[in-house]
Length: 550
Image (tube, rainbow, N blue to C red; front, side, top):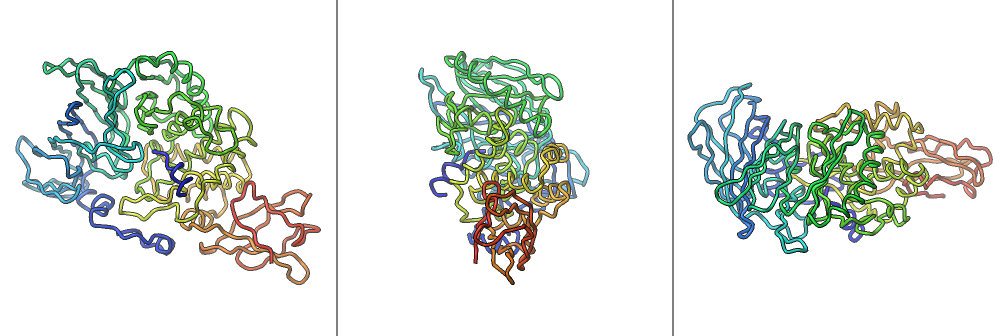
């Protein structure tokens, strides 16, 4: 995803759960619900296939084209909703050769069919549209189309739309819960330029009007915000990675004058990234579509099977280490982080943007696992610890549901710390690895909820971690372990917001060995020999909490 981590460092219709009501105070407009809520007008049809066919007039910053929707009716209906930003014009919506009536409200488009489409029916319609899409001023943090030029003055154009949504540049059902099963992406560009999109290139056609059309086919489910156009003077090189499922093609599309630089840089990090993540998370999820890095005029995005790369061939995050430990300067942040999203974000996708933490927390954590794979476990944990410096703890990691709103930017660094802490609690590295791989196998090519992920980890761990996840994800405040002397013996209790919060935590008398202790919200004796309030120590390297001694 677009990295909110620097923003977090600087600034560090919803689901009416008690936890969310306590931390989400924002007011939302009807447009937010139209975009974020799964109403019957959206759930009545299940998308199976898109054919997006778009021409880019780069000089005029104008696009025109169509998108074919193929779907299966999940219930009887005569009306449905798709989405397209209001600044783009819909020329017509064609169904069985005739134009359908439609109305618009904000970015929602409501189409009425001449007669009911029956449950189970497979049907289709085509939306023809045109206009000047929103220009992204600071992609990937804001969405839209990037229009720029490379260092030789050649046009260089890219789309980046995760936060804003795919409907900022093409008509779609703009909700993460419904991923299209397969897709043909046809992008026409002025002759002399190339388009690189997701999936595999099927065909290149020279058109009579001075344009070239590139047809890219995606043979796997894909979320609409991952669909991308990348237009420029690209050169290609590639290879094959011997992965868990066999031969995985690796393709790299970079500006023509950067080929030699890219070959050296990508060869350092891509193979070891794939090795690390297949070990920890299981097989790469898109062998049929391959793995691609595409040089982009913005920093980067996890566009499925076509990761956008704009880190300028530097180590770290544009030459910086976000952890402050120096451990982030021996690898390319964008290659590792954005590729990690191929497992968490692309393979496993949250149904609601309020659960974007599923994408960002696991992917942020993948950075430390990459360090562990290429160095030591201790170094990986030091990196995670270093990320704490950018955590704000001001609002909840989980966002409000049904209004197209993400949670706090803490979903990155705090999420990584939480997962490392979960590993510590489970205290079995092989079990932890199996949980991470099991998530990607159980939810392979699926969309998920908060309960899916936290419930799976809890079940596989054999520990009730639900109150633990609620505290750290639904509330901004850290839990506090309070120590007090009760009848001459050290005792401990938790002060937390989540109901029934508890977690086993490592405690020791200074100089001794850490031992796991468990307790709830009432004082419980700490059964460690010789321990008292003057020498008690908590493992605050692996546990993210506050300590109070009364």
